[in-house]
Length: 297
Image (tube, rainbow, N blue to C red; front, side, top):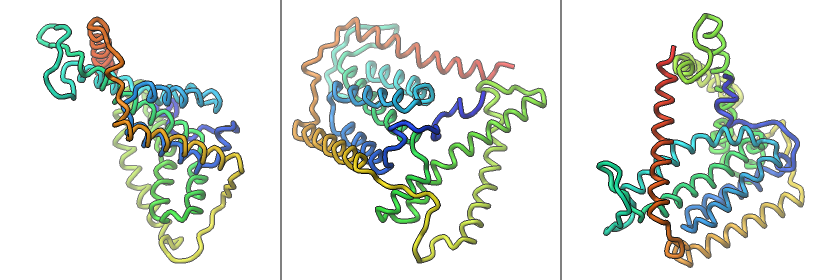
C-alpha cells in the first residue's frame, strides 16, 4: 500500500483544463464555495455544489484519487446523520418516528443532518480538486502577486508541499518494514511508521529553519520565484463569474434567512429509520474494520 494511494491529497500531475486554470481563480471558487455552503441550509443547492465539484474530477483526470480522498466522509457523514436522528440539533419538542432498542429516533434532525453533511461534502470535494490540480509553488507565486504577507503565503505553500513529502517517507518506511518481515500493508502497518515519520519531521523542520535563515527569509527586498504563473483572460472570466455567482447565491441565502426549505421536504418515518440503520451500520463497520486491521497479524 503506497501512501500516495492511501492519502491522495497531493497534486496529481496533468495538463487538463482544470490544471491550467490560474490558482487564484481556483482559490476564489473554493472560498466562494465555503461561504455559500455555510450561508445556506438549502440541501438542493448544497448537493448541486457537491455534484458540480465531482463532475470536475473526470475533466481533470483525478476521479480515482478524488474518490479515495473523499472516503474520510464515510465515517464522518454516517456518524453525523446517526447523531442528528437520535439527538436533533433543533429546539424541542422533537417528533419521535420509531425506536430501536433503547434509542428513540426523531425525524426533526435528519434534514439538518443532510445540511451539515452537504456543507462538508461540497467544500471538501472542491478543495480536493484544487489541491490535486494546483502546484503549491504556483499558488505561492500567485498569492505573492496579490501582496499576501510573505510569511502567511509561505506557511500555506509549505503545508501543501510537505504532504507529498510525508507520504513518500511513510511509503519508504513501510517498504523497509516489509523487507524486515513486518507487515507492509493495511492499517496495522501504518501505525508503527508514525514514530520514525514524526522524528523525521522534526529533523526536517530543523533543516528547513537553517535553510531559510541561510537564504535570508524575512529580510526586506524583492522576492523572486523560479516558477512563473501568468493569468489568461479565460482564467479571470472563470474567477470573476464564479465569484460573482457564488457571492450572489450567498447574499440571496442570507436575505432568505439561510434559505431553509425543510418545510417543503417531508421525510417519511421509514426513510428516517432506514437512514439511521444504514448510517450507524456504516460507522460501526468502519470502526470494527479499522480495529480488525490493527489487530490482524
